[in-house]
Amino acid sequence: MTRSKKKSRNNIRKLALDQIKSYFNEIEKIKSDNLPLANRYLDICRRISMRCKVRIPRSYKINICNNCKKLLIPGITSRVRIRNNKKTHITITCLYCKNQKRFYINKNENR
Ligand SMILES: [Zn+2]
Image (tube, rainbow, N blue to C red; front, side, top):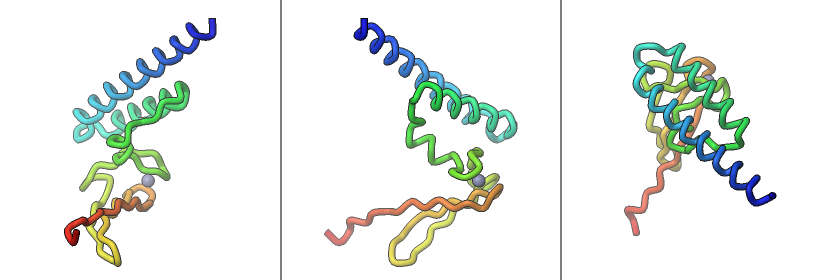
């Protein structure tokens, strides 16, 4: 009995991940024309991931603000800069709440 329960839970997770992926595909298509709808889809994705305990893939998470959970589009809702103090990194600033995200770049050129 427990085995079948586990199996169905895995199935639900797989379905949820598929749905999240399809929503993000849709967001990619409409984000330049219809930003409110894209943000609405993003909200749905977050709800699916919370309810089914599925993580949103990292490649999609880069496009979401950690503070206000809105969609980050370079040049429209976010500012992207390359900075260099001690280490080279990319700074993404959300233009809604001015929250900053940093991504460090590992340079392995000297090796
Ligand atoms: Zn924000």
